[in-house]
Length: 445
Image (cartoon, rainbow, N blue to C red):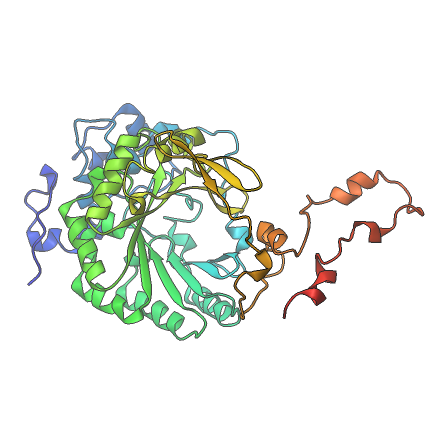
């Protein structure tokens, strides 16, 4: 028999029998979403009450388990701020967008986002166990009318079958673990039938919002589809309960590596001491910190945003001050669809032709003497595919010698100044030998 959960419960749920409380279906069907229901657990502020009574606001749903983690006497409780709306959500801000990451622009078929060369994001549902107030997909998440149909699932699978460069599929949404078990298994089965898909990942906050969903039955099913990876989403140490620890233990015992993605949120976790406690608690339950995201430019999230300098300050207080595997990457998901960009403090201070100057987390400055006899042409040879997907080589393409520059759109036309094509404008002048298409003949096959 599994060990029973020892749960913190709000007084409202004191008389709920254990078998119901520990049933994830009961948790889903008893979520709180109105001012009247939520006020039975925590006294609402005027800002919260106004937001909850506003039509058209992003969906509110909180599981009984998760709302029980809130200190009802603290209006600034970090768990509370993540799931209880405030009137600030209705305030617009500069650069606010509906789809700030341009996911829909990178969507070849409904529900599939193919931004990077070898991996895709597969949105399998628009529903979650509870709804984060800073949700980057609030344009579709929580809306039953946006749910993906079986026909759209089929389109996603067919796209993957005919796109052999895809080796990694991330299931997200919404939250894949709120799907009916048979539907989730159907998706995993169909993905595993595609030979070139090597890795399947799941992004889920269900273990945090509703850890009783992580049953032995679920983990037995998931481990049939290895290699399978799972990232959870914890933003504050107060979310790490005995129940979450037990849920993570079941997942790791099923051979599923666990990571954590958190979001830097003003008033919730924008403090290096909170972040250090968070990563320490995560690694104790065998969850490796993976990403710390800068808050996206989505509607309703303006009051959660911090300056990027705050994120760099936090990274400065983590790197060197704790174990390397406990330090996440600080990421800005580029507005407009540029993808994830890592940002970190500057540790490289200067360099010469044979030496680099570095500093450590304490401010200790040192030099590293570089080899003077290194021959780049003698680097290890790779026998496999050498060229990335056209148009996505980026800086790597310059290092590989494919191109010498990357130009903004219209760069040449602007600098032509509308002039005529005359005898001094010979295009051969600007084609370097051995670089670009003309140089491929000289490259090793």
